[in-house]
Length: 124
Image (cartoon, rainbow, N blue to C red; front, side):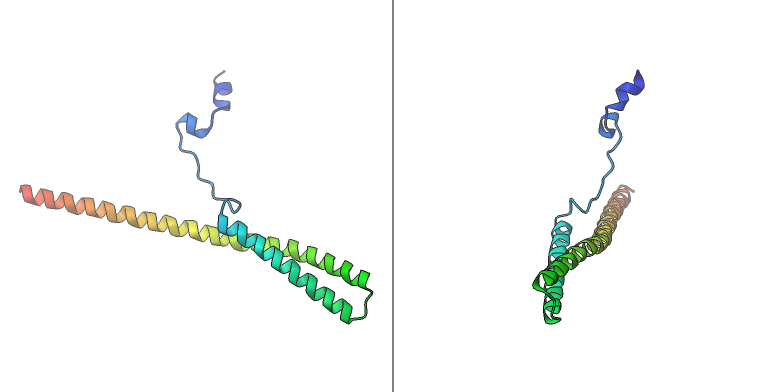
């Protein structure tokens, strides 16, 4: 019975702190950056392959077909690269924020210790 009651409750209901999850999908700059990189890469590759095929005396149908396939492949490849790059960027941003927070806490702790030492020196 006790397991069934705890099963539906989240961590916050059990009294534990919920774990903070950082996601690329929730990051506004990452989402836009990935979308922008995919679009640009696909469009550039499409135009390049189409131009090269037309210059190379291919039929228009074959040139467009190859350009479409190349654009799709470029889209998928750049999508994966962009995800890897943005994952590193987001992780470094989180680490930087953690370091800044630790520095602030350390400065506050030192300030409290200094004030406590001053108060103790005044009473003596």
